[in-house]
Image 1 (cartoon, rainbow, N blue to C red):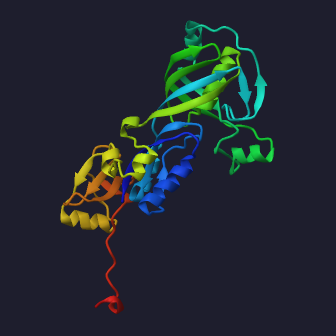
Image 2 (cartoon, rainbow, N blue to C red):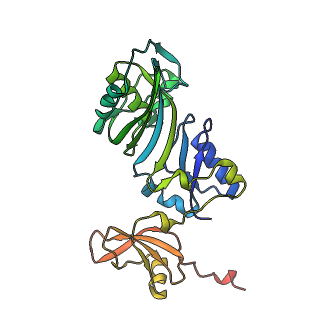
Image 3 (tube, rainbow, N blue to C red):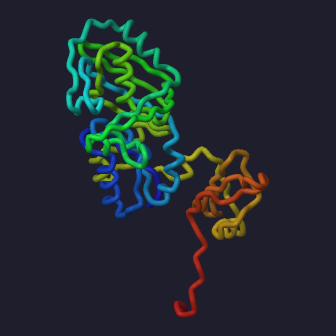
Length: 296
């Protein structure tokens, strides 16, 4: 089976746990996801199965939307409520207008420091490995963009907001930075991813749905925005042999189907000759002729 399934990840399990469950369900090792969710977080986890694992890199480069619940008055080593408490303070009175004004300061692009407890790498080593070993490390900073942020709820010691952010944004870090802006330590208490690119919770199934075979499979051409081109039999044979063809799309890439509608490949513009297109991802290849000893 080849395609994309969206899982509404429950709290308390890792993204890897979900990948392993899907792999077991469909009896394949070719399973991957397009963006990790912390165990504390829930929501859209986009899972690629079979040949669709070849297009994961095209699906990770998308904006995401979240609903985040913040606990004020706490600072932890993991930047969320599950971590070791490093500081606990009283929360001063805060009104919605003042909080909204501070949140709006984050709309735009800024340099965000990556959390220590994350899978980001420094010198080939994951940051959480430094943390667990008690080793000091300089945390990298990366440019992230907050497209929109909106206050949803405010109570004396917590608040909830929604946000639309660029890829690579850590919501735990955003919450830490909001706390710094407020001069109140803040940690993530709950997080729900509601959208990842074209996928939303409306497309998602739960773990129980998956086990009961109530799920939706998105095809590879369906999730890509590239032009779809149906080839004739001779062109299809050439594609299955990895040959270049005259370019037949206006953008950088095109999805190629055989006359029966079977996905063959994704082709891209040839760098040396823009009138040609060449293979980028190939899903069907020409079978080798049987050796004499294998013939019946």
